[in-house]
Length: 195
Image (cartoon, helix red, strand yellow):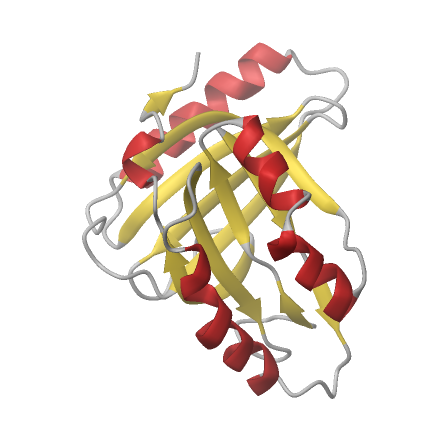
């Protein structure tokens, strides 16, 4: 499993209805894309849930690197580049994926929490600690799905969780509204620890 996200920060006066319409019309186009475990079409709106910015920031879980590559070099991503410029694409090696108690519901929100692994820390111990937190999160009411990834280049852990409704106030990280969820190969994502 690979996790991927690009975050397109938009001007403060940007009409976010443009993004909502874009997702409404283009979102279903990936509902049957082979190799895509899930894509959460996330947005942040300035002043909502503490967001300082307007942002379009979809998050992906891919079943294999080839699927991610087909998307990045194919027409879907080229539409993003044409309309917004080429964003930086963050990606993480998958460490774990779980479905929560609300896996059958339609998620409305998401949280993204990045945690650096300090240079003096044992990376294996940091990953085990993050896996324990993921296991706790998986059991929380309202959790649709949750994933954990790591970027070993910058030693950053990423926790991404989809929620049926609003995430609990105690949940750390950036908060997104989820406008659409594509899950063509959700059942192909391996559950639990990825090694």
